[in-house]
Image (cartoon, rainbow, N blue to C red; front, top):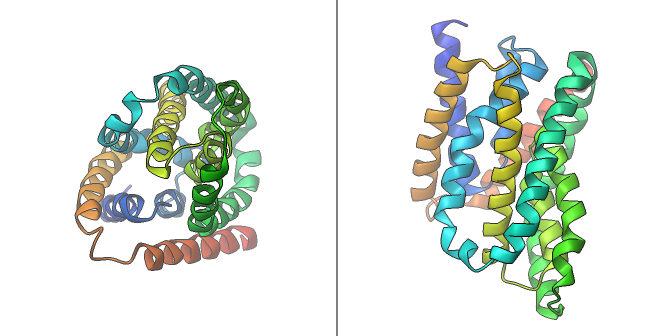
Length: 253
């Protein structure tokens, strides 16, 4: 890659970090950017996943207080997230470039739609959790869908948070703040498991991943500070529109 391309990737990662802090959907910026600069689809996804790991650590650490009260859930769901993320990563590497490249526009379209319905889903879940009855059986009932969501997360990842939050909202009676912390921990588990597999795949562009990780962290910090000044709904719809445009471009190519 040229110096100009590295600079543009750094700016894209910074923007993605800020977007993730404010509305979510940063992968819809960084993944297409990598492929636009000639990185093969699988390698772009692998590099993007590795680069996002620090951001997941930061988000989970920031909500650690809400996780301490959910130890029972974590014992059940973190292994599901780890195993699912591992399976998804292996599936990606086994599926190969041709199959994954054919799925990319559909995956981006799915991620864009998930981001679009995210706020509506949160309102629905907030109402539903008020009506639920807490039950210990909810832990093992949530294991399979969380594991399947993690498989998707290990395979592609964009939109994983919306899927996991939906599963948790259906399974548990609790506040969205608490469930969001649990969602972050599960997403972290799936992402780390996938990143470990990818680290030994020989397809990670390490210099690019390092630049993206640093810039995404910086962008996330700035985004967090701008939370009260920028309309997250407007930003979300901007990212959704970008994702839909990118999906259309991939369909046409």
